[in-house]
Image 1 (tube, helix red, strand yellow):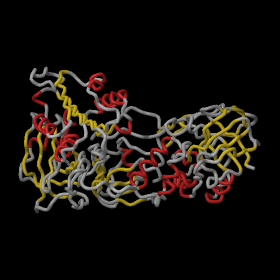
Image 2 (cartoon, rainbow, N blue to C red):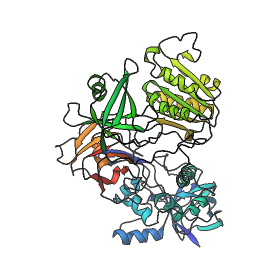
Image 3 (cartoon, rainbow, N blue to C red):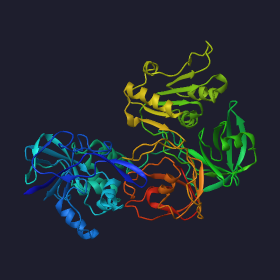
Image 4 (cartoon, rainbow, N blue to C red):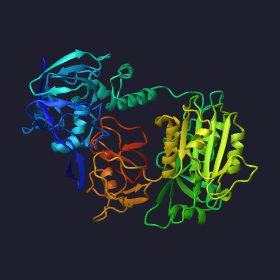
Length: 586
């Protein structure tokens, strides 16, 4: 019979960590006597980061006394006391390789259901003073697990734990954890996981994505080419940067010019997916070359790429492109990359953009028009006025090639001509989108300023579109994901403090920072943080892949080998350092 050995609680508090303040509830301590367990937590307990811990699905965290004994031996520690792994219940007799997702238990007056393994999180390492602890929990198959409270009631140390129902697929906590975080996934276990109603929605979504990734890509051709016999060109991408020639430069508006790029030797180019971007490296007069990323703005041909660049008033690279770059010049280009891409399927499509944000969705429109795609499509664009409406004629002609296309443009500073009913003065609104008849099962792709994307994404969600079907793209630094870290005032990215390093140059392409590497930094993530570049991470030990970043150029080595390597062309910055000059899409 399993037994509840200890009930541990603790309210969130601010903890100093690596020069920052972390608001965390990881500090739990045993409490005597009965405690009331409610839907969201235990009396006297709280969680600091409700995005990853707590809530109805993760109300109670469980860890095993046997795992305490295991870690005491593995870590050579004799100071581990109940609650130090952040758990609410320390138990005897509920090992992770036997407890299953969906199992139901009675403890004292309360009833519980197992919902998911513990979330990999740096805070357990912070609490124990073992920075790699999040990775060790997964690698050694001892994560612990969360409970949902089915029936509220009192519990206390010494209560017996009674199994009242097994989970429907009998998939253990340890197997479920390995299925998400470790390589060589068993497709049969993935199917089992997706058949467990009790599994938390977040883990279900992750497993759906993993299952979809195991499916072969639809053939023939790219999305929308179901009726076509055309096959995608099997031309390999190139590592790092490749020298290309500027074939021509075409002004589109007073502030936007398109640059056509060709190879120097006439070899065919890899076929980019609609929505991807190129990174361009230019010597613009600074101490190091500058790297910027621009969307491909048309469907690529076998020998030509097109990017379209807006001249930003204080933009070093865009100013150079508009004022100095000439046909015949040689530039360094990295292979097409990016995940903001047009997907296949039969659902309706909505392409929404503002200003220069039209470029990636215009590439999608080119692909759809070339295939005469039958899916209903809505093109919605916002521009300042007619003079600054880039690609207006090109877009109109492409939409005319589609059997079921709807066009609506907005001019914020000019009234439209009465002969153009598809142009409206103002900005798109929620009622306007609803009046367009956009189906709620559509896939939407949005590109523009962050506030524009937030607004339009919100309008579409209000209209009924699922959040996972609303895709956005931005080329400035992505919003940070630093769970539990207390927010501070935003600081413009800068060179790291202290003496400059003597190692290879590291370029953060989105942030416009190039700086030499110094071994004083523990990882590329650590260097990015020293430059106040917005970063994304959770475990900081190579497990969760939250920090995965496109490696535009260069080579790295892992200081802590990740449990599963990321996809080729990407790197986990939390546990890597450079071995050559490196360009990161960060």
